[in-house]
Length: 302
Ligand code: NAD
Image (cartoon, rainbow, N blue to C red; front, side, top):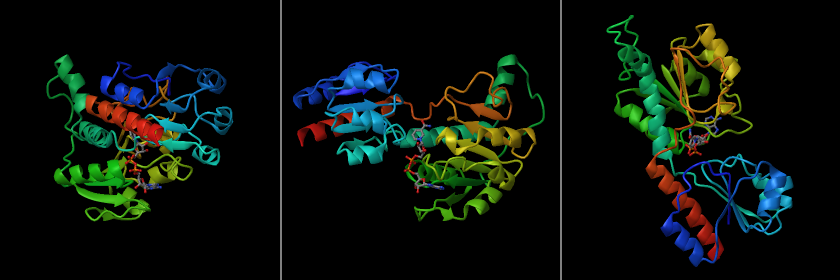
């Protein structure tokens, strides 16, 4: 088993590693700069785990003749060409639910941080500025929260937002959720005080939030994005914020990560940025590990 470019905690996990050893496998961590380096370093691998890079493209997969299982160390499959893997007889897996509550809580924490101006007011509190500037906090209870994508994370956000006393509207072309009032995308954008995005990044959702979407949103609305950076056009977002056509944004994910130092989203009182931390907690780390090791051991045993 080869683990690629894992940037997280590399401490040994005795229980999981014992299960791997029992299944007759050993784990090697490889830091490969690109596909060629990966093929060179992991040419003998039966199983590869990839967190971010290099991607397991068709070209790379074709040059890994022993590979039987490719696992995304996380949610989503953007790093693996699933169609090519399937054609080549390579099984593919990921850990779709390891951080559902974490990301939902992060989205809600960001939403509340904007509505209560927590970050902005913290800066004042740290500087000893008391009751400084007009109160622009907003009450979540009684406001309308629009949840785009009612899968694992979105439906959890919807449930908790409702518990805060918000009216929740949902949009999802596939899923129907009995506890959320579902409306069309445009109606959701036009009605919501807060829009929280929880869709996968696909050809259809790329730049789902573009200039047209921002034009439909209320000028005092807040956009919260903890899904994938490519779902939001950052250029259109900056334009909408600059023109006062959008109230605020809270972002955990970006079109380019890390967010470049000169990016115009930085340094605004109405934008909060977290560096793709929405999934992280000791609990999610444990669940992710268990899911990946578990799927690997299961595959090795069959
Ligand atoms: P999920 O697959 O359970 O749910 C996604 C939902 O989006 C599905 O119900 C699907 O029908 C819906 N959807 C697809 N296209 C849509 C569209 N055009 N409009 C509205 N809905 C649409 O996924 P999830 O586990 O809830 O994850 C949601 C997002 O969160 C994904 O983008 C995932 O990559 C991201 N994520 C981010 C982090 C982070 O660290 N910030 C961590 C995990 C997941």
